[in-house]
Length: 164
Ligand SMILES: Nc1c(NC[C@H](O)[C@H](O)[C@H](O)CO)[nH]c(=O)[nH]c1=O
Ligand SMILES: CC(=O)[C@@H](O)COP(=O)(O)O
Image (cartoon, rainbow, N blue to C red; front, side, top):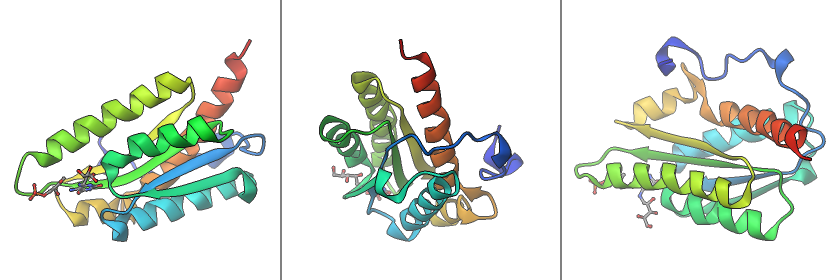
């Protein structure tokens, strides 16, 4: 469903399970920090709202969205984490670089999730301009960071429930 038809943060918070049992990593890209900082705050606040302990949230910064891939891989390889949230903002420029970055990040994050058999959440905005990005980082369309955090909690529960 297109975002403009559904507020990203319009979740029925009563159906989000508790995040208390889990440890989460958050990897944030510094490119477009005016947007990614808001995504991070939305994700962090949402994790706390759903009972995740502050000590169970490990946050790291990376240069750009492309580095979210290796940032998530490093976290899962070196820390005891149940799920990773990747937050970034890729804004169309004058060239096709946007297309390559977006495709690489989406596919790379999926590969990291498969490699570690752990949820790695794609919390990356891919927009035409900064206005669209700000609308989805705490603006009129909610906060994709909030959405990504709730997704991470739900996937951590699913992962736990399916473990032998
Ligand atoms: N243009 C954007 C980038 N570009 C940088 C890449 O993500 C990467 O850091 C670089 O290619 C070196 O590997 N990154 C964003 O997150 N957002 C952009 O709009
Ligand atoms: C997504 C990007 O890397 C992009 O913002 C870079 O801008 P440009 O395509 O004008 O070089």
